[in-house]
Figure (cartoon, rainbow, N blue to C red):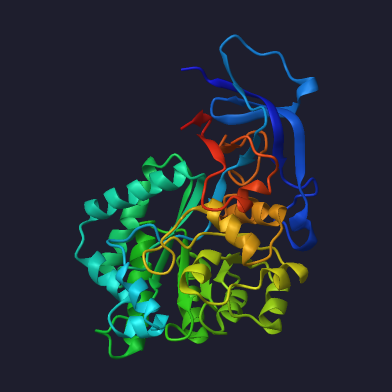
Length: 413
């Protein structure tokens, strides 16, 4: 197998802003550094070098050549929020919503997270793995080059460990980086009359067991109306920190829940969702290093108010974009469609959404050293567009892919 590949005549090589250091925030989100009429050399699965065609290097005899005339080359998407491991879809809940029932009403009638937990508890580890691996393969073919996967559909010690072991198996064989998040505090099972008993189970049994097996990188809590309070969230995340699990928060999806306050207090890596925000939360995030992760697919599918990306960016915040791929509230992991929703619903400029879905997504997963931007020495996880007039065509031409080829570790799929 040839271990060198030369991409030639690239219409536009999408590079990070030249001033890039850490998260891309505020006005810098709309900056880009597109190298026109470019080349890129891949060696042994890594980005070796790149530059203008007028200065292209001499090629070795065993080098394959890919003509990229009329095409753009971008880094693969970094999806920092997904629930890829689940036992069954919940398409019946769409009919319930269409009949006028709310998210919380559906949960009260046996749907929602508790429905997923019931099905997952009855599913074998191998069945879960096979289904999740199929979904992972689909996402990679759609351009995802790094993925975070949460537990949270187990809601018992045994089932949460089962989910995380599936994620660990995916990590072992996946050609792209995967991060695992423990989300035992996703909902409180109906079998617990006393919510404090379940929180104690999460803190005293689940977290120590997860840490003992090294099954998670992060600990997350669904801090929202009808789920976990700010105080409960802080308690759980501080327990996770004692066991080496960095905090993340599902925050303010359904209401101003204290999720942002909890995330800032514990120094979370990210606060995700953020549909319900006011000046207090935005100012808190601006004073912190917490990455806001926006999930427009959830607002689109549930028909709720989307996160106010413009207000956050104008306040100088960084934002990341992710899919929230899950069976109940966002049954799609297509990051190209996320870019389209970012444009139409969140009013984000093309460069803003690309930076949010690549560089900032990688930072939200703690993998900026290996993903999120085109840089020498990084794995060659790249996207080759179809012949398109501009990068704006990607979010503009929604529902149809503008990608011609996906490269993983230096090889086109």
